[in-house]
Length: 332
Image (cartoon, rainbow, N blue to C red):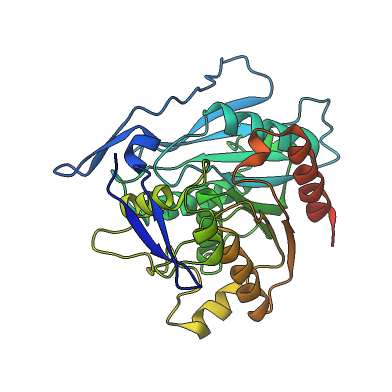
């Protein structure tokens, strides 16, 4: 049994959690090496060389990162170029990969439904590679897409033939949404031409902080994403010695407002998706307000009920989300 964790609610009462996050995640932290033994059952989908709709490509051999590209499972015409979605998977920075079944299937669904070319990025995991490693891998991915646009002779054939480099979107789910947001901020300082970032899509962005919110108190022991589990994910992924008010975690905690406003000016439009059955909900609502305060054009799909990650397990919710993503991408 885990030691009891006491959290102060907004009404002054105390909420107690006895969840052991290591037991929940089936992980063991090896502090001497700062590594994680992962026993969490994760099914994966390996690709064959003759797969017609997905392929794996090395991104940075030194970092052992890669990209899995998806294209629609329909007849394509080179005369109708497709938007390119640069996608980052979830897992609290510590779990999963592009080959994980839930994210492979999700990216396939996006490619077919929008339709679009999806560039799914397999970033390094913490604690072996703590933040900002995943953000650096995101920059690698942006530069990789740029290089595909510039090298017309040797570029990846699917991107060359079907991709619209002038219509790219950065997208992520949960911790991947956190990566997508930071990637977009970093993109504001890069010369990505001829690649143009048309928008940012954030599904259930993973945001933290020291002070507890009402939704965290209410969903302290949530079966999908309890507060002790999210706290552990931050503990394992943030730079050693950092707390949850670090700007990687608390996206509302920024000491240079003017710099942030300038970087946010790079975001042409942003879609934020969330639900109040998610312990992260209150932080997501405040994040939307922060972006709007920086004059970002924000569309928010913040619904009642639901739970964190529901689009991976509920086909109806997946269809609703994909319709919203498609409308967002096709809108001016």
